[in-house]
Length: 479
Image 1 (spheres, helix red, strand yellow):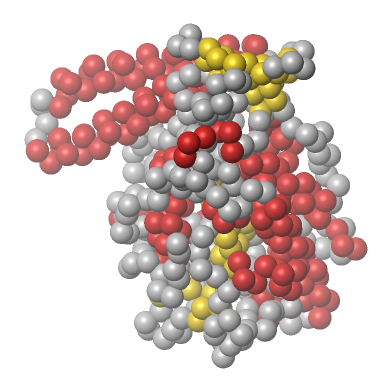
Image 2: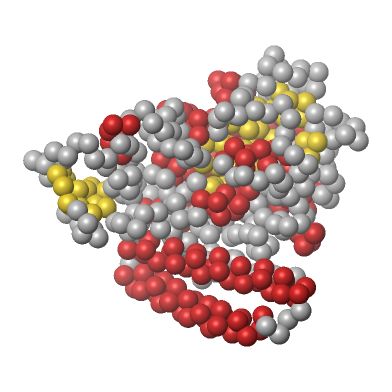
């Protein structure tokens, strides 16, 4: 889903609010000025809507605002990232904090282990690419394989929601940030930088990996909804309804904050600390609502492709979703994405379900099916890497892949419910890749949450702990 605006409301530990179907899209402010580029055959004119200034393209030393649009004949087309959007006198100067993105690709049933993992005696750069991962072979210098990382015994399918937090939901109260997932932590960090702070996606499978800090599982959207959220303008009545909802929520928060002043004076010191946490959650929501409002009237990017058909099979649907992910990153619509994908009966000429195949019992027919399904996932990951590598990142320099971290993994290791030695691949993002990293199998096992902490620090978060981490991941460096 596109982050729901009420997800950060405080909740009682004894009950979680279930996700609501009418939760709206989280649309956040990136700049206080709306900038439109009006193009004609003779000249281009930049208009700053707040009336501060207006100038023509003869002022070549003034950078083009990053969120610029070509507008005419009733359409508004978002410009791609251009060098003209950086100061002309400082074209080689990059932002103090690089713009980073995060994408997690996952499934819910683990992998066929013998086809996925590199041999444990082949640590380093000289490993033989495993059969399932061969579609990624051309990118081996841009990815890292891991062996013996996991979140401990998270009990079969219950491990799936633990992938991006390291924390089992029912134990969340024992951790400072609960079972907050990496993508949602990044969404908090980015704040108002993009229209959608995060996007939670699915293809022929549910997505169970995204959780807010209040423990709410973020619902996922499918291919058609993803396309329409990114590119189709909302009708006037929907905008009016969203505006009214935000106004109503603001009114409620005003009452809450006013009453809170009186309550706080009646509490003891311990309760005051707890109540302060409650008020901080309310303030976060208040700020979130404030940031959403300006996005209601900002035009969305106009895509160069038509809405992709849905239900054309797992291979076609997953490929189309991957291409939309690349477009979302290219248009800077979001910087945190999770996608869970599965399998539909009949795809690849197979009869059966992914779950059933995952309990293969060493049957050759089931193993062959798993290899087909999982090889397709690697093929689409390679396609995403191709798309991002081919696109220049004019904000940071290099390619979009250089500044987009891709994590492929699952919180359950294999179909027979093992959660030991999770299947994990890391790509892009400015990490130093090309290795198969093998960690201890004994009592000195390294938590997979250390990898999550490294991803967050690489993204720019100044934190030294996340979930069950004990530190950043050794043998993994980034620039």
